[in-house]
Image (cartoon, rainbow, N blue to C red):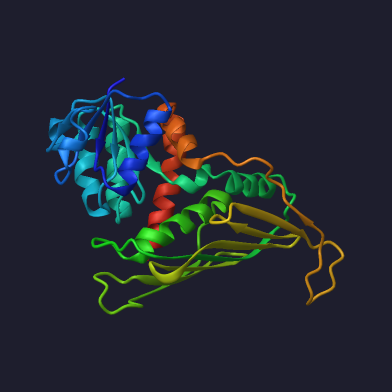
Length: 296
């Protein structure tokens, strides 16, 4: 199977290494700024993505380029793995999906946290009723860089958190408020964003920034039966049983329900290679719902 990678920056290199580890070595690389000498001995290199002749293509380029590049490959019936977010317009995303269904092409958006073992466990226990009803969510995604030049922190970072919320709960918000701002005035785009997303029975607060000196990847889910803390940076998932707890002091028994952790990117890549039209239809809903919340 011949594969193509468009964009071999930081994340593109990680994609390439993971493809190699999965046994996929028939790869053509496209990157206008690539030092081709480093790759030509092992992989064919082209400068224009329209020169790629591949069965499946990985688009790991700036968000502002996704729509144009995806459209080209979909029109040619090529299966696509696209870095999140698919676009910064839900209407353009709808057009891409419509075209993909019409051209018998798979369109896969890499919402990588939907393949995270801890997030999958939270969803499983929410769906089976163990956790009870969700009451509030607090999400912090903070780090120093990398700075983006075509989208702000809401689209770059909060996209992850909104996709997680929609993946687990799949509800439509009743009220959405975003405050985008520059923590550092020299930033090209708004480097920080605070979102307040109100649903029928719970509220989610999303705090993101790429101008924060400490790396933080923590989410707190408050259910009526359990208090769930997930830290992706520390690879940590904790449940606190709220049965017979005396408020306002939390003193419930603790448990750590996810004994095994699998690398989410490998799971995402494997999902792409076995992606079906039915699965694409489900992922379309997640993608469109997430983009609509981000573009409010």
